[in-house]
Image (cartoon, rainbow, N blue to C red; front, top):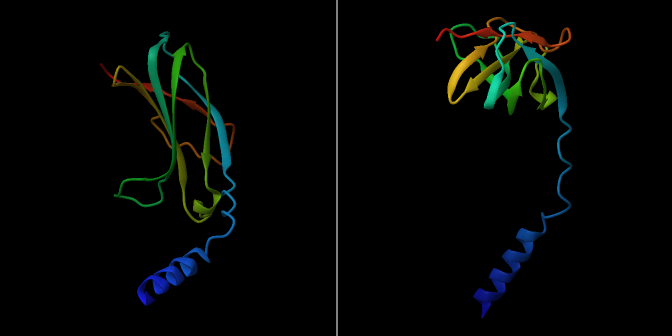
Length: 131
């Protein structure tokens, strides 16, 4: 009998920490558009991936802070919005937006250069990938 009473007490004490759910984190958005100059139209089912990355460290892969994937179709430009947690941004570090478009699983366009997401209008010129 004492065993059950002790278990009930432990269960009640465990629930004591349950209060109101914490407030969801306030996310911040970066918006922009990606485009290319080639006279081709993105096919139905093409996918554009936008990544916010910490590119501060040399000789290591960039750390992905946030990633957004969306379908694109038709001619550019392709508008995008990516949400990120501002607590993950360190002003001493260097960040970049990376954009890629895949068609039927094959890479078609990619952003070839560093694009600072916190300066300018985030119009990203993509480069075609050799077939």
